[in-house]
Image (cartoon, rainbow, N blue to C red; front, side):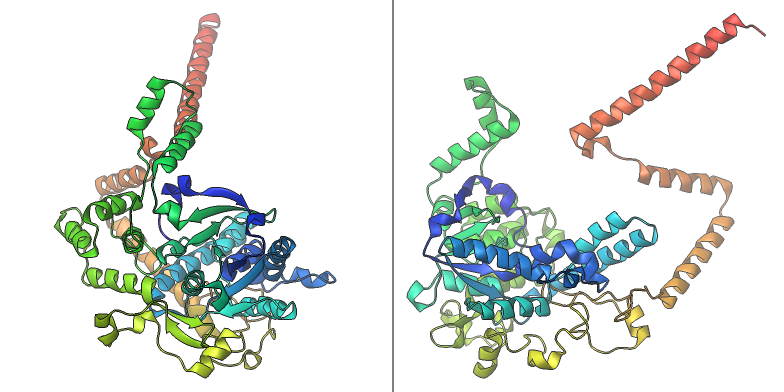
Length: 512
């Protein structure tokens, strides 16, 4: 989630702050992050439709309890929070949703495999990777916020875009002073202040846009201090000189919002994955030289390394991702309507291809979605969605036949339902996919027939290839792992030598 490699290369721009410094200010909250942090540790219970917290008097669901604890911490420091929830699915994010869905489905399958093998801890850990925040979990938190009279907004589409819009409008028109989130996409949207890594003790990591795009002298000093501390360097001119030669900090001195947005897109974001071999640092070098999108794409196209990966439509997709970050549809609090984040340029305003920014919605529907009365996907009232009838896992599950549940593979984004396709609603017993097992058996039989038809020499060659695949390249391992491997090898030969010497001694003492 977010910009690939951003946090790794911008640690020296983060300042550790306490939330008390934002006393009497408005802070926008990315609700999905807190919902995930609260529910992910109960991923296995949620998946199996078990709710142990209901047996405790007064206990709330974990995806509600953690955000409420964070809310109480903010209120104790006299901070006015504004919760923002994800709304309808953005068309620009469809490829990323499909990719994440496949990844979560694989994690879910592995979790069930681990459970069948009796490896419950591994199964629970893998199920956490498959965990999804559903709109019904968000509805639970919305109901609690409504009881406490806490301000919230369900965005028309992406919560990140709505938060960025609130961060760039005056406070008297519903804006906020800062945003609290774990998603680095907010940097690409052009937010002024983002607070990462929030904790219950009130400490956060602050990233300010004026520092990020401002003079880099102080930032470079901080970077060198962090590198010295990490590498264990002591003071000394020679060592500091060698360290400067070895490491170069990533800086954005004099960059514009558009250049930062382009960097985030090229390095890989939620709307477009990066091409093979294009990381954050390489993308930074290209944007720093090219300055503009056209020149940057021309440099990439001229490089033979990236030519095979410049698929059809990549240039157009970069432009669409850029437009999505700059002009997405959001909710304007003062007018009560959906508007674009920024005023559209003339050429873009005349274009008919603006679906990636979000299809237009009726004003009445927008109001109902924003107030948390209508489900953003089905566009129906929550009361019609059988809310809490079957628990959080099945509440949005459409009625299907058992065979369809067994054979269909579904994927869900962070606001889709996390339904296990091998589980019947209200049942904890995994259902066997007969078609899948038949295909597996057929493949095994074909493989066995091929193996029997091979000559002995071909069999030996096949075994050697398998062994080569299983061997581990020590160069790719961590230095500690290499040392451990060498130690094991040394101990093995030492034991072998000792055994051989002992055997030789015994033969000398007791000759046959």
